[in-house]
Structures are given as C-alpha cells and as structure tokens.
Length: 357
Image (cartoon, rainbow, N blue to C red):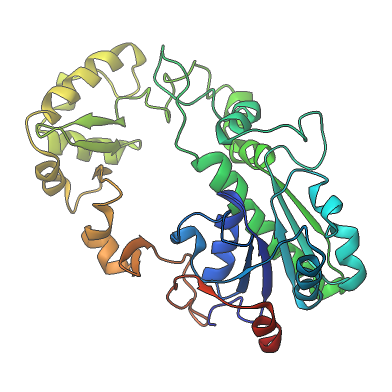
C-alpha cells in the first residue's frame, strides 16, 4: 500500500453510501481497509468506485464463529466503521464497549443519519430527510418552486462520509498523544448543518435576505446561473466580481452601457433574458471556445461521462480507469507520499488478513 495512511488498518462493516464513501477515502489514501460483508455478498452493491481498494471477507456476524472472527480483526485494527442504527452493534456483540476491552486504541467510527442520540435517532431516513431537518434543503431550487434534491451529495457524501473520514483522521491523530482510541459519532444531519455555516453567517448579517432562488449564489443572480445553448447543452456562468463580469460581457459581445447595472436587482430579469438570448445563438462547445483563456468564469456543463475527456481533467489525471470503469481519482494530492492507483475489491479470508497484520 502507498499513500499517507499506509499502515493504518481499517475494518469496515458493509453498508450503503456514506460509510463506504468515507472508507473509500481512507483506502485511496493508503489505509488497508478490510470490508466485512455477509455470506454471499448480499449487502454490498456490485463493485464500483465506492468499494475500490478493499479486501473483502464474508462473515455471518449473527453466528458465534463469525463474531469471533470479527473481534480477532478488531484486536489488531486501528479503526472500525459501522453504519447500523444505534444499539444494533451492541446487541450483536461488537459495540464500542466490547471492542474497547480487546483493543483500547481502536477508533470506532459510527455512521448514521440522525446520530447516536436524540428523538429521531432510531428512525429510518435518507439523505433528503437529513438535509431537510438540517436546513440544507430549503434553500435549494428556483424561485417560486419547491426545494430541489441535489442528488445525495450533501447528506450521504459531503456531510456524511467525508465528515466521517475527517473525524477518524482527527481521532487517529489524537491517539498519537493519548494512546487511546475513541468513538467518532458521525451523523449526516450534523454534517449537513455544518456545510451551511457560511449561509448562517450571511443570514445573520443580512446578506442572504431573499427567499429561495433570489440570492447571489442560488441562481437568483443572472451572472451566477446556467444558460441553454443552441444545441441543447448548457454553460455555467459565475462572473461575480466586476473584472470577471466585464470579461463575460466582452465574450457575449454586449456593452455594459446598454444593460441594467450588474447589482441592480430590478434589472435582473431583463439582464437574464438578454444573456439567455445571446447564449442561445451558439453551441455549448462554441461558447467554451469563445471564453477559453479568459477570466469570465464561464464553463461548459459536462455530463459525468463527458468529464473524463475534458482537457484539464485529462492533464490533471482527475479520472482514472479501474477494471474498465472510469471513476474519480484519489484526492487530494500528496507530494511526498502520493496515493497509489485504486484497485478493484478482492476476496480474502480472515486468516489471510491476520497473517499479514
């Protein structure tokens, strides 16, 4: 294994979305992640980016021999990650108290939607529910329309798995000082709320005063929005600062004197209509060529299948291919301990893992 986490041993109990994403980050950065699935592999989706970089063992955790095998792994691990509802791991015999007795240095990562306590802790939910209660869903969408779900990026991945990985890394760092492990209670509702920190500040100081879809960064401003092109594609415009806005107008062939002022909210509908009219005269890629090399902050809106072929992404090697599947490369980049290329999951036995550990 290569990467800054080489030598870190992680036991991941199979789950969906946020836990696997957090453990994918750890594996990408060099940790040896052992994915524990049920017999027959019934809980893990078909191999894809979220399962990459793992060795996989199958254990029946409801059977004594399966539980014993898991605890033998835990005894030598640095991290355990589980995504069960509160109390389930305890009932099955591998809760934090069980694990601490055999490995007091263990970092015990718990990934849930609502957290380990609170009135909703035992309830089912999905990304859309967690971000709704966190206040992260209501601001998303067009003016006058209902809130729009942003895939499951905010709750599952950014506020869930990413924050789980951050918590685990912080606990590992603290362990270097104390010698002790601890529980990391990662909840998607907490993480989603944390992602809204900037906007809570803007609401408090009055710089985010308008309803959904009418503010500076939510599509309300015509110079921070998307526009359809003549071929049915789209371009993204983020020309917030005056120099960037001037470059946008120059590329569009528009004179600022003939338009409402950039920050004249009463003139925004007319400004948006004029931008839409001009953008509709050329294809997406033609506009990309017009704005290439400028600071107008205009970019083509690429599909996930198009993104790997973009020249910048190709130059940066932002995407890699694993078993014929294009997927995002490990990030961030490290100068002295670079992460190795991700690999497809491979099946092993507990004894094989322990022999190597």
